[in-house]
Length: 160
Length: 253
Image 1 (cartoon, rainbow over the protein chains, first blue to last red):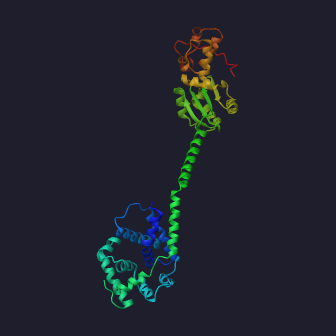
Image 2: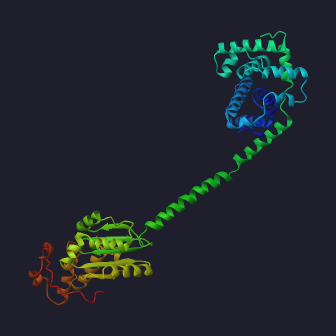
């Protein structure tokens, strides 16, 4: 079991990543809190050391995505608010950011993951395929489709 | 576009409230798992469960009173504190056959006794004039008196049935000698009259034969003199030891 200092550091270091993944999957604050607790409790109980920071970060991404999927599968998600409302709630977003994020949220779920991991976290398609356990060609396809959709929605060039 | 996506995601941060609540949650989880209370409580609960189970088993399955039933089939019924038969122990071949043929366990002792008396092996022998001895041994005087009274009530309609109390120490000696209680008590009476008699001499005899033998010795005759009178009933003659006349057995109770 990890110590308090270690978990606090992890919350500081990976909290934003977990939060962003929650944002592209979940519909409300309560669910986000659930995911935080699930993910960091797993970290608390995860005794094996990580090979590197990258390894640790990838672990957090994978665990968070799985936790989100599990939550969405559960019966209670039907009572939650629609996805689009979330970004509106986040009052401190700029209009520009809100527009971009709404465009991302308009994508199918599998494309959202890929867009986030590629454009924000900087993972390459082969890295994403390993992280998500999917065929690398599927990732390329997802990326290409997402790029097209975003271009339509936001205008301008998306470089991949 | 890359830049726009980056900037947009950059504006998403984990709220301080969410982080604080998560930290508090982890601390609670840590405290819960570190505290030995839950573990101890679980172990204690298991232990109590086990002890209650074992205690209950002991309480129920420990015979507190022994009913020794002898004609020639010698059977001992162990009766627990709820007056139920919890063990059936045979002391000879006939007894074993009798015990096997009847399902006496977990019956009320009176029902068990009735079944025994009604069984072919016992009823047949009683009809032939054999003697049935029921000896009640128990540490709890109240229970053994109650069981004795119950046994007497059960056998009230029968002649040639004798019920009596026995002693715990004698019971142990009897078991040590490989005899059932009723037979061992009769053997003790016999031995008092003729110290040369051993338990082996009486092991194969029916209660009637032993009683007759006692009566013969009491009347002053020797075994040899009585020899010609015996051996007929059930063909259970015992080499070297004769058996006396029927003298009844008043006063034994």
